[in-house]
Amino acid sequence: MNNIVLLVVDVQNALIKKHPHNEQKVIENIKKLILTARDNKKEVIYVRHDDGKGTELEQGTDGWQIYNDIAPNSGEFIVEKEYNSAFHRTGLREHLESKEIDTIILVGLQTEYCIDATLKSAFDYGYKIIIPEETNTTFDNEYLSGNKLYEFYNYKIWNKRFANVLSMDDVMKILLDN
Image 1 (spheres, rainbow, N blue to C red):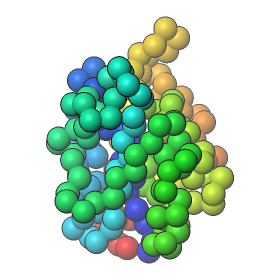
Image 2 (cartoon, one colour; image 1 turned 45 degrees about the horizontal axis):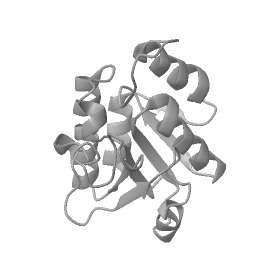
Image 3 (cartoon, helix red, strand yellow; image 1 turned 90 degrees about the vertical axis):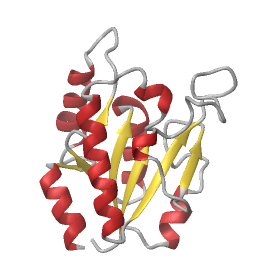
C-alpha cells in the first residue's frame, strides 16, 4: 500500500453552510487526515463539484469554493467535476495512473451521491478503497436521516464489498506506516 492517496470530495462552502450530519467531527477528522497525509508525503487530491449556472455550487461562486478549514495548499491537485463520480469525464484516473496509485482513502460529501458514485467507479477501476469512519456525511431527506444514510452506506453497502470502512486510528496508522 505504498501508493496511497487521500481523495477529498466536495467539501465545499455551500454544502458545509447547510450543516450536514456530524459536521464538526467529519471536518475535524478530514483535517487530521490531510495533515497526516501531507506530513508523510502522501498526495492529497481535492474534488470540487460544479452544479451549473444559477446553482449554489456554480463555478466561481463562494459556495463552490473548497471549505477553508480543509483548503488545498498551493499546487495540490484539484479535480473539477460536473457529475456525481469524480472519475466521470475528469482527469482523475489518468492522474492516479501516472502516480501508480493503487489505494484511495476516500472522504467528503455527500455519502449517498458523490461519495457512493466515486467509490463504485474507483472499485470498478481496480483501486483498493478505504473509508475512514466519520469522514463522509450527508443531509436528512424525506426518507432517512443523515445519520441513517451514513450508517446504511458505510456499514451495509460499502464495507467489505466495495471498500474497507476502518476506524480513524487504523487509517492514521496506515498513513504513518507507508
